[in-house]
Amino acid sequence: MGATTDTSETITQTNTFNASVSTVFGIIASSSEHSAMTGAPAELSDEPGGSFTTHGGAIEGWLIESLSNERLVQAWRPADWPAGVYSLVRYDFVANGDSTDITLTHSAIPEGAAPHLAEGWNTMYRGPLAAHLDR
Image 1 (spheres, helix red, strand yellow):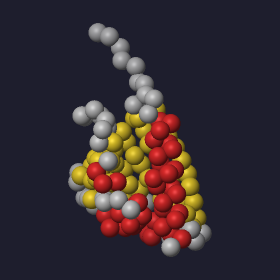
Image 2 (cartoon, rainbow, N blue to C red; image 1 turned 180 degrees about the vertical axis):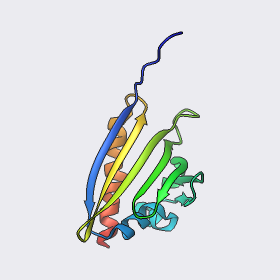
Image 3 (cartoon, one colour; image 1 turned 135 degrees about the vertical axis):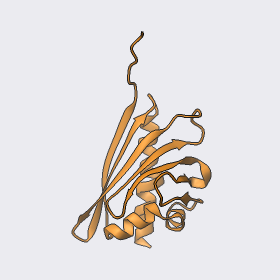
Image 4 (cartoon, rainbow, N blue to C red; image 1 turned 45 degrees about the vertical axis):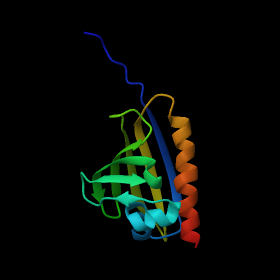
C-alpha cells in the first residue's frame, strides 16, 4: 500500500469590522445581505446540510455548521474546481467593543490555490464587507 501525502494549504485571516457581531454575521449568512454586500446573487441556506452559492454561482458548497453570531463552517469550492473537490471555510465572529473580529480559516485548499484564494478573500469579502458597513 502506498502512502498519501497531504498537500493541502490553509489561509488564516483576522479582520476587524466596525459593526456589531449580529450585523456582521447577518451580512455573511443572509442571502439578501450577502448579495447586497458583493453585488452578485447569493443563495445561502441557514440549515446545516443546506447548499449555497455566492457570486452568481461562482462559489458553491453546503453549510456544515451555523452557530448564530459565533461561527459558520462551510464545505466550499469554486464552481470550476474538479467535481468532488471541496475545501473547508470557517468564520469565527468575536465582539471587540463596538466592533467585530472575524477570523477566517480556509483549509484543505488544493496545492497552489492558496495565493489566489487569499487575495480573493481580501478583494471579494473583506473590502466589500467594510464598504457595505460604511454605507
